[in-house]
Image (cartoon, rainbow, N blue to C red):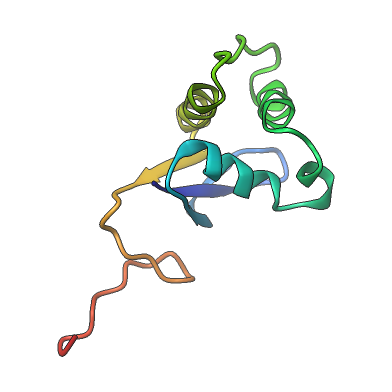
Length: 107
């Protein structure tokens, strides 16, 4: 699974041109990588992290599913609806500046 976490303005408006690229085998691992981005969220459990983010985005969010894997998938889909996350095709090769990278001709 590959996602782009969009950069935002100070007011929280997503900036379509940029963001941070994350890759993990499943949604729960993506959430773990997201949590680890700052020392303020790294210590939180996955559910507490997701609920905290959703409160900031949605105000009074609907509950997440009980199953951790399903909760992580639901969390990412809800962020997508707000334009904060974009799913990328698994076969897309992305460089550090989020530009698509073409493979070398001789490789």
